[in-house]
Amino acid sequence: MKLRELFTARDMTEGAPWKRIMEFAVPMLIGNLAQQLYNTVDSIVVGKYVGDNALAAVGTCMPIFNLLLAVFVGVSTGAGIVISQRFGADDREGLSRAIGNCVTLAAITSVATMLIGVVITEPLLRLLSTPDSVFDWCAQYLKIFFLGAAGFTYYNILSGILRGLGDSFSALGFLLLATILNIFLDVWFVASFGMGVPGVALATIIAQAISAALCFVKLLHMREVFDLNWHTLRMRKDTAWRIIKLGVPSGITQGIMSVAMLVVQSLTNSMGEMVMACNVIIMRVDGFAMMPNMSFGQALSVYAGQNVGAGRLDRVEQGTKQGSVMALAVSATITAILLFAGRFMFGLFTDTPELMDMAVRMMRILAVGYICVAVTQVLGGVMRGAGDTATPMWITMVSTIVLRVPIAYGMAWLTRTEAFPKGQPQALFGSLLISWAVGALLTYIAYRRGVWRKKALVTN
Image 1: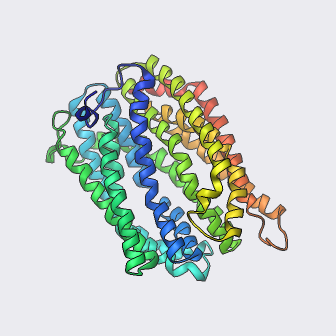
Image 2: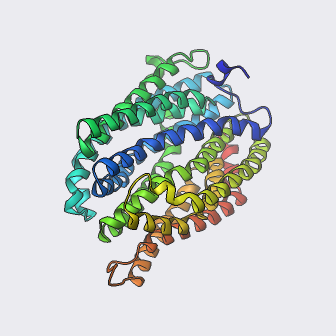
Image 3: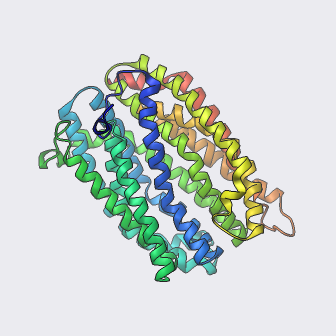
């Protein structure tokens, strides 16, 4: 394959399934890792140059930011499904309408996110019992992030369009450029200008805006695949409704996860700054550990969508089996790395021995859970690609709201000690491991039941 061909739309309805999945998943993985660097570099810079309290502040902000982005996630997911299916069906007109409506919907969700986010920032932080020692930093970080939400929203939606077309390399290249810029600006704003926590937020939104602009320019140069003009940008009830209908369950899923994180974050905050900082470190490393599973899930979603559009359910099932084997092998490797090299990773965030020791203990609880997540991501990706976005939503609701939150608070109550009057941090991560395991089991059962096949037949 020539280098230029890597940066074009790719048909996933032909060729060996495992090869098509890997061609898509590898650049997705690199891109997801690069995107995770946005928040991780923020944490490393503030942890090293400002202190552990600033590290805790940055981590406390993310569940709130993710909650407000639930709507955008829904639009992005619905768009990816419609685009991959229309591309697989070789429907240029339908594909053009879907892409145009996605661009317009992104504008609407961006404005809503900015306005709502700034208004609710401080009330939410107070609701979460955010300590006074980090409250102002959290508020400044979030307000800057929300004001620059358009770049984040557009990058993710536009890169989702490119991925729906089978082009995961272009989005990767743009993201790598933006990541390098983000790292440079982080250090410059914080170390040189002493801007502290607001500096890392400003650096991130500048880098995200640039990556969004590059994705838009790329789409403008893909006229051989679809049309992007005022006619296709005009909102069409049927197209917009289909994107929203498919995307709402995914948006709700993201919202449910964010609400659960917010509720558990309140418990985390009550345990003090040391546990808050430990949680930030674990979640940053967790973000990287999750990337391969998420990449396989996204690859299987596009793969399934294109093959459903082409009426090739036989290839969907072949790809599911081969993708599952690859994802499980990668997850087992990640688990081993985390168990043996965790302390080195945590040392990147802090020089405090007690904090590193706590993080190592907590990661030992979580490590094996990444194998469970591999099952959830791959099979959930197939179901979403086929048009069944509701089933993963219900599974997430059960595993997070029904199970994780009560278990976390119950375990915390049962493990109260003089040193940890609000409960031990093991409650936070033990409950997460249980929710992952149950989620994997329910996802496997749902996949075997085959409701997604009926959705695929209706769609096609």
